[in-house]
Length: 187
Image: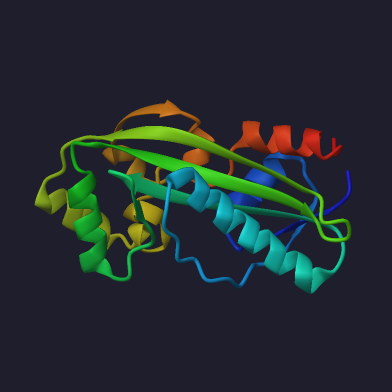
């Protein structure tokens, strides 16, 4: 398989690509991540924007970009700016279900051919006390995660139940990636 350009600096996405045996090099995208609109349209647009940015700079090769967002009541919860905002997000998620979507875009920089998809999961949080939220925020883990938690880390202890694609919550659906690669003729 040809090497893919990963339009992300995420160590989680890199690890998942390694697990799948996909050769890649990291080329982080540099785009504005502000979004609005329907959840699926948001994550698809962000993934496309990232892929187009890297493809324009690289000029050749296939670029894989992904974006994961947490949605509560249809509103996107991005990465918290500080500990106070992280605590507010976690308090809002406490005892409730929310949706996590990962949009992916595979783009051929030379031909402009593009393959996209969106994978999702519904996450049910347990009830969190103020102290539990403060302790978790103090670990620093919430600071670079959409929705202020990392399900693959300490944040997994906050989750009561998952419906759907676990890997979509981590940032790169393995099922979805396999489908994209197949559609693009890559094995």
